[in-house]
Length: 150
Image 1 (tube, rainbow, N blue to C red):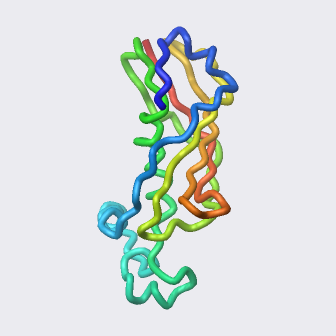
Image 2 (image 1 turned 30 degrees about the horizontal axis):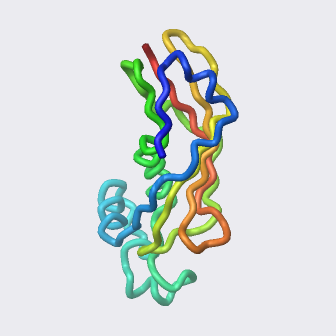
């Protein structure tokens, strides 16, 4: 469920768990499209036949593909009204804890760790965990920074 707050209410989110997104399936088509966009055609991602004999028993998503899905996941969890500009400001820490197999369904949890005032708006620090359905370990753990400007 999406949390909606005004720009002025952002500081009140500090410490708040925003919950989980809906699941998204990681398809071979999505992996291939990402490979084309990044020129990363390593067989472990793009060759299902060869990957079947590899260490994961099939193709896996690029770690950066999984991380990039934090963008649409984030918009499922938070909407800030009154912000004219919303910016992905960066990442303080990212870990690719476990692989995401093609065909897996993944989702993200986010917890707001800090909200600081910056010129013209606020910076929001968020701990994000992306997990694959049925897996015991997360796929990605990240601390992301977002900025919202009036």
